[in-house]
Image (cartoon, helix red, strand yellow):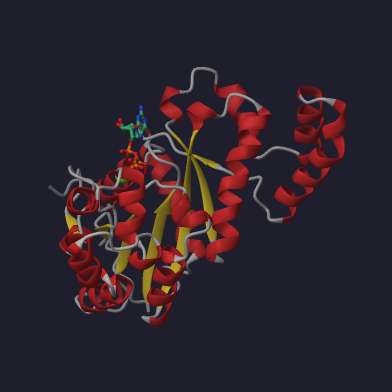
Length: 287
Ligand SMILES: Nc1nc2c(ncn2[C@@H]2O[C@H](COP(=O)(O)OP(=O)(O)OP(=O)(O)O)[C@@H](O)[C@H]2O)c(=O)[nH]1
Ligand SMILES: [Mg+2]
């Protein structure tokens, strides 16, 4: 049995920073963890990259060869290509043939790479921020199914930037994006409000960490025109029924913050329930 976190969330929400902080935390406590780059557009890493999707495909190549912009190029990188393009000239055609079975290549690549990891290994996948990847494009879903076939317990870690949660309407729209990942991927799911060090008035945000559905509804109704009353009620019920109304704050200045989040994720994927997991005692005097 292996363990994995799939770190997703909107562009710039702090996924890669979270991954490198998690790596450093695990290093400090003597815990083994491997971070995988799944972002074909990534350039700089603050963590040692255990596996790198850029060995398979890079955004730069796809943009150049196919004349796509950064977002379309990225989706192309991750997805089966033929759906997105019609070959227009011979060079496009050869690229199409070359990439024709990209999804299968991804499976092969993943299989080969995963063979390097043993039982009880813990992988963290740093994903790209394009929201399509976890809202309706099936590539991450297929990817997760592959991991599960390889006997990995997987948890989605969804990051939302606390800087955007300035009022209840933005909070709800953040919840809806997270919910779409939840229904797409059907995995244990942990929500994180990132960049808490930047929040000036902690009390404003604390209201959204674990809010009462009724209080949220009242706030929504207050902000929006009366004709939205019924919709607001349904939205809040939906979010509540999916147990979405719960975010863990992540303040990277505090070691305890990342430690607590990791412990919650461990519970979600049942890490540490087997006796032989690789946690060694933390000795603060050790170099
Ligand atoms: N102050 C502060 N800045 C942060 C934190 N996390 C991330 N950032 C900054 O936010 C920006 C984006 O962070 P990334 O970690 O690259 O975000 P990402 O989600 O990986 O972005 P994409 O991969 O492009 O989707 C960078 O400038 C980070 O330095 C945080 O906890 N606090
Ligand atoms: Mg990133």
